[in-house]
Every structure is written in C-alpha cells, then in structure tokens.
Image (cartoon, rainbow, N blue to C red; front, top):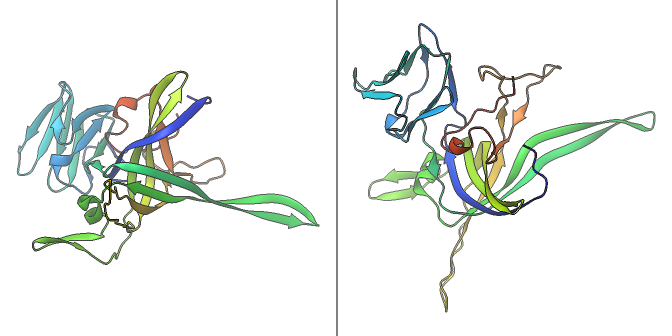
Length: 280
C-alpha cells in the first residue's frame, strides 16, 4: 500500500460526522445498550457490508422492516437478525460482530483548503554532559479548514448556532464538540489521477473567521476559515472491542485513516466513520 512517486494537488468532498467513530457491538443473548438517534439518517455496516445508507436499504440480501413494535427497526437476512428499538436495546442473532453508526455523515460546504501541522515537541534528556535520549510529546495536529460557505447544521451540531423563532442565532460557544472530519485529496500517480480518502478523528473546530468585500468589476468570492485541532482516538485491537496496547502497555492514538483505491473497503470508506484497528 506504500505510495512513493505521487503528486497531491486538490482537496474536495469535505464532510463530517458527530459519531467520531463507528460503534462496535458484540453479539450477546441479552443485547447491549447505546444511545439511539433518528434512524432516517442511519448508516449501518454489518460484517463489513454496507446495508443501510442514509436510512435507505441498499443491500438486496437484507430485508428492512419498520415499526415491528413502536419505533422499532429490524434488519433480517438468512440466519441473521438485527433489531433496534427506541429504548436503545440492540439484539443480534447469528452474528459475531456488527459495525453500526446511527449518526449520519453530513456535508461541510465546499472545501477551499485544509492545512495540518503536527503538534509535536521533543525534550532532550541529559546526563553526565551527554544527550541520553529524546522524549517525544505527540499531541495530535492543529491547522485550519477553509470553506466557501458556513453550513448552518454544522454550526448547530458544534454548539455555535441555535435555531430560534424566525431566525438562526449565532450564540456564545459553551462547549467543544469532538467529531470526525472526512476529506479527499486528488493525486497524480503513475500517469493517472486518483482520489485518496481520509478521516480525521477527535476534531474540534473554532468559530469561523468571516470577511466580506464589495464587488467592483468581478464578483468577490468570500471564504471562511475554521481553526482545527485534531486530538485523535485510541487505536483498537483487531476485533475492535478494546483499546490496543503495545508490548509496554501503552495505548496509541490514531489521528487519521487514509484509504487508497487499492485498499480493501475503499468504495464505502467515506460512507461511515471507520474504527481504527490493528491487524490480526
């Protein structure tokens, strides 16, 4: 999967999800509890297959049944059953694992630019007049996102705007909402143009800067810039059930996942927030 002689030149298809990662449920006889959101926006992946996208069943091997009980959704296939109720109880039959996200992936206007800078520092350790080692401190990434429009639903989700009577209010921000941000990069690779897909984890954006100029001869297009902090999320074990720890007992943060056209799962990589997992 290593890419060497490649030229990257364009950013596009900027999206976000408040899920921050796909939720992993393990099958059990008693079911598991989780927070339930509106199924109309749901994206569901089961055993690596995209079953429901934006609330629409797209896999013909499965049957979607609504309102079996009040506010219940049931997905069935041969030897498999998947149920969601308004109480947030998940029941799985005939499945080992199901990857589920009930928080939609939404557009984040049109991308103008994205910049990322490593938030990394080093402290040298000295003894007897010599450098004995270097202690790294990796806190993730910082940067900016420039877009051509401020999306109202993004501002509301991030706690910067509020729908009030007959208007949208720009309000005092009282919280920092961690979420995942998706973007694509075009690249020139061995004579072909390819699209590289990326997810950033643990993202927090600040209020966008605004600047407007009058139009004289030609229309002036205004861009909006968000400050960006990428905190990441813990890498999971190969099953996705627990945080991965290395041989020294350390958990490891994952800040970004990247998918190339020859990567397994590339076609659905942007449909839902993936869970960063180590290889078996």
